[in-house]
Length: 204
Image (cartoon, rainbow, N blue to C red; front, side, top):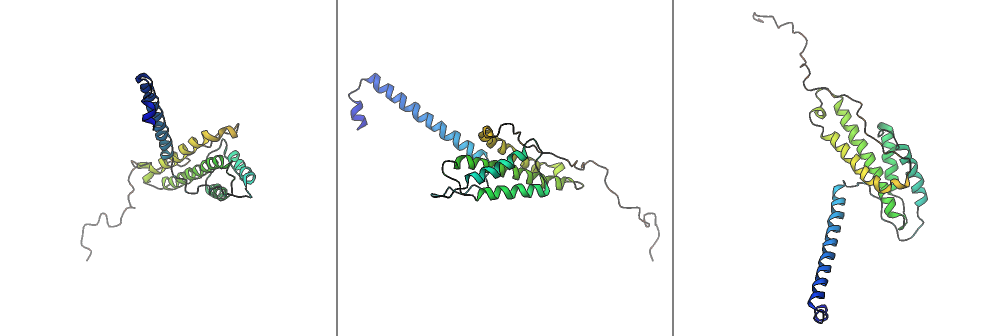
């Protein structure tokens, strides 16, 4: 039907229509690629916000109150460790189970992801520091686990850029390495001097 209508148009107009259609298709293709790349660049949120139910009651206010308290508590600090980290993980998982209204859901999903990535980076850093505190730590030779912590921190920063307007004055958390790994080039350990080291005769 479109081709029949176009037959009545001049060749110049037909060419313009083709050019516009081509640009529109290219624009849509770029948008799809950008969105796909953005989604694939972020690690999976293992405790995602549950789907918004069709009917209430909704917990938007409770969600915001708890999330705001947590985010402001993380502001301008190093990522928590130990009991404080467990509390952060507990809060994030509690938020993920709340009933959120459809209108607030996109924002709540970003907030939940930010707190998940924050807790995950803290978890990875904690594991790395526990290893780094041991002699001949594999973390000293290969900082893969520390890199994992940085990866989740970078993911949280990406999400933070989407919600930071809601939190004026908040400075995102940082990672801190308080344990100095044992160098692999340290002097090798020798067992205490053996009483048999200078023995040259027979045992029997």
